[in-house]
Length: 337
Image (cartoon, rainbow, N blue to C red; front, side, top):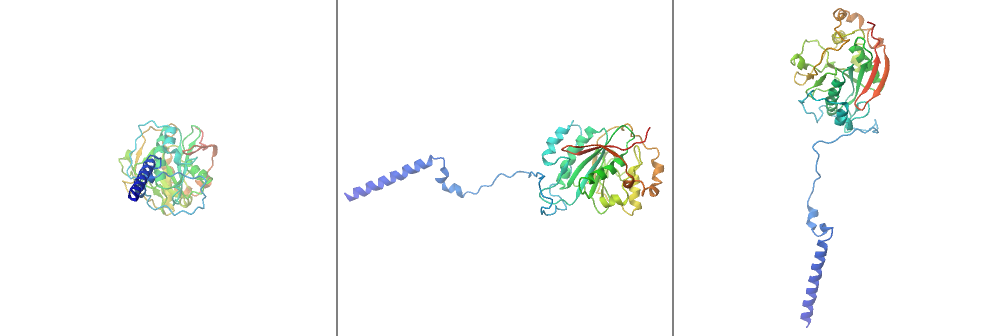
């Protein structure tokens, strides 16, 4: 009798345990039943490229390690094309989430080595500017620069003065931030390699050394036009650009001579890294070749101490902050006729 009672208890226990297991299996928390699943190591899906967003409220005094000499996310040779009809909104959609109003950006993962003002002399080149912004913002961000883009727009239809616009860009950008490096760029030149760093060095730097228009060959040894970089000290040492080159040509050669007279020489990237693509266009109206440029270049040494930043005169008509740039419209006081 006792033996039968014991067998009955065993059967009841087995039945109860089986029922409990069935109930547990059909509950929402099945992982309790399949306990071994907890021991499997799982890894979150990793994105191919980290998204870095600027923090406008980030304290300038926050302790960050310096950015590396060679930025880690550079791509090297770039594909650049100008056939697409890009709008400003297209460019905003492309790079807008990563930058701050006024075309400002700085890396959040490290401390940028330089504070760079990128200055673009401008008039009536809206489509060119759209292409330039589309390509340059991603390049400058990958280069881990603390930078701002300043488009200096000449008001009116008087003779164009590219050099004076760049002096104005230098002056106006320093009113906003303590930039220590200045890159002066024509709006129609886009780099074909992002290893060509938009930074300043111990020597004035000529970045656009191999342009497709010139079959990627440096036209002459002392050229210093297109895209150039000078530190604040270098720029002030030569008193900036001349303000008196009206129309096309001569102002870059004048600056090259100023550098030479002050004992500086021009550094350049190699002809592969320093490649650029130029947007094809005709000569702008009111930007005819300057007939006096050759004569003026013989007078650089005599004029450089009195013609430049220390004699700069202009009137700001408007400062407009777009997401992609700071647009400064100025009256450069062009001569009549």
